[in-house]
Image 1 (cartoon, rainbow over the protein chains, first blue to last red):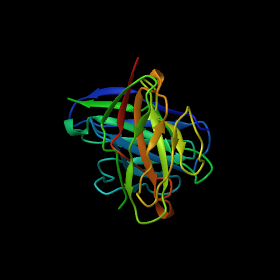
Image 2: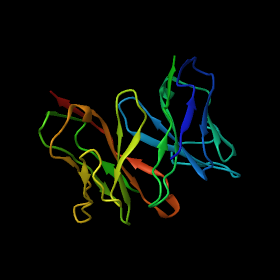
Image 3: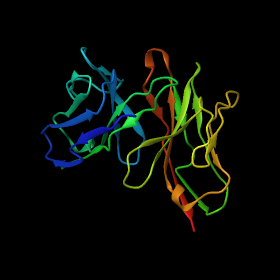
Length: 115
Length: 111
């Protein structure tokens, strides 16, 4: 199993500012994922954070808006840049599942409100 | 692109009644299907996956490739089953590890 610590758990931010969310895993993992859950919506994958290379972004998400760092195999950050009220969501960090071997584990989420 | 559909946003049953949470998917390959659950004030966690064919907390789910469905069932619901349930798909290949989620179903089990 993997234990994921994500912080902050919640924040209220002013529009135009940036927030960096941290994700710490208690074991080394190859891939980490960042998801967004907008109010009343399902989870949507933002990007895959790969150690030693640039993150891979899904359609509709760009690096300038959501820069990601992955300095080592246990840690990643997601920054939400130049925030607007539309960025108000829950952001989740996840360690990906390995086929047939392990399940996907999730952080507790960061509830972001942009005012 | 793959898609997961959970047609019911809300589902209410009484304790002891059978419950079925529906999940349909669209994907041309051979996906892996999962059910994740989020209890109140807890993080998202795996309930079961189709490859293991397990029964977890009395829940079962069978992958029906013909109907592209992966419905979650429990013969006798309990109050502690009240939670948000997500059906998820892993397309594998170059997308391996990335999950596509359904919209989620809030299950409420009344006493």
